[in-house]
Image (cartoon, rainbow, N blue to C red):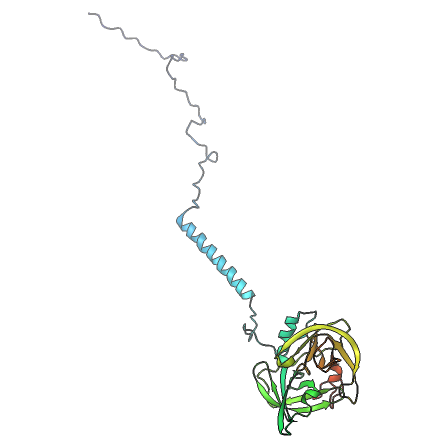
Length: 313
């Protein structure tokens, strides 16, 4: 029996690789083999931090809420007056201030109404049966000074045996004539009691023809009524007392009627420029037909012992 012959493979210095087989490659010293990484080159990146984590989301939410809280607090604080001793509640002014520019009739009325008073007078009269009876009349006045002094028309209180004034806050008080000027038809009253807050009117200068004016009074007993118009003329004369002429009067067309006498004539800046004293009517009706008269405030302030520049106090 023959033995199988075994072929011995010799080490060939450069044998040709057999087809279908991979010849191992000789690695030279210093050469980089696949899978190896040279230090400093191509190092794997460090793992990136994860931002979308529950803990981080909670921190962001807390920060946003804190920022909103600070912003809201800043808005609230800047809207307040934080000066020491100041109150945020509105404090009523002791006196109105004149406006720098024209204001509406409604605003003038609201500003001046605390300064206007209703005057009720009692006089002794005689009836047809010769029995003495009391006669009642209504007029208007305006507070002209912080001490409560009231300016009105002289004929409103002339011959009165009793005078009573009513303020817009409901306070009523007896009053007496402090001074009078029959020629200019002006008088001042001193009330025995003042309201809790005295609001004197702002007194202004002379008006011009065409200026807007507002009248406040109690025409025909209609308490605290207002009307508006314009200055129709200046330096008018009127023989109101049938003895001496009242001169330098303001003519206006704001509606006034009996009961308006003594009330303020106000310009469009809220300043009292005159005291209403009369109206013109060619008939005996005594009602308004478009012509009213007021004593300029400068002349009214000269009533009694005044000098025409300051209230006669």
